[in-house]
View 1 (cartoon, rainbow, N blue to C red):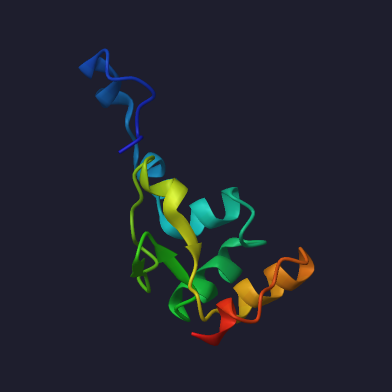
View 2 (cartoon, rainbow, N blue to C red; view 1 turned 60 degrees about the vertical axis):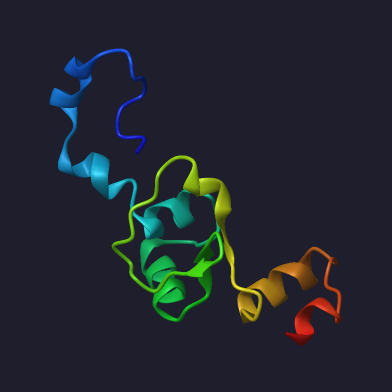
Length: 99
């Protein structure tokens, strides 16, 4: 899940704390990936249904991510936030926003 840096020793599991699990929560990952400015905004985006992990829209703020799942955190296709980000980056295509 990414709580310890290596798989070499089970001794590292003794050092896993509650804060290690908190750092794997979806709002924290959104802030770390610069998709949200702060935890409150990240929580609001998740609860409003703007965030998906893979193909699944996630509305639970306590959702725990593994390291491999971090690469698949994106905005939903119909999200207004995605629209604004694409307009800012001058990458918006009207055909993509029809769905």
